Length: 77
Figure 1 (tube, rainbow, N blue to C red):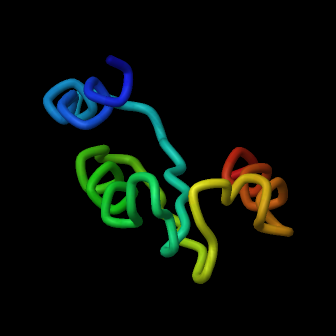
Figure 2 (figure 1 turned 60 degrees about the vertical axis):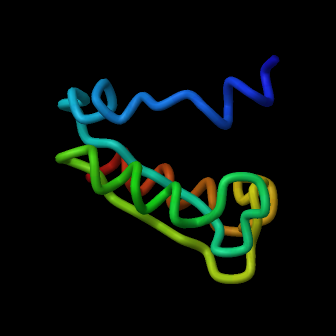
């Protein structure tokens, strides 16, 4: 049921209501949702910043050596 919900759920109408700065991070080798999902998400949030890591997948938060520093830098600005 959860897999079906992931495939069929569409929250873009709600996502566009986000009003705070948002950092969307993904990998261009994401085999779970694809990098296009990160781009689509960022495109629907007015104050968003998008970072796509080349060669990384769905676990970018574990794979990217500079992930933590990227997030901290986003919060510092």
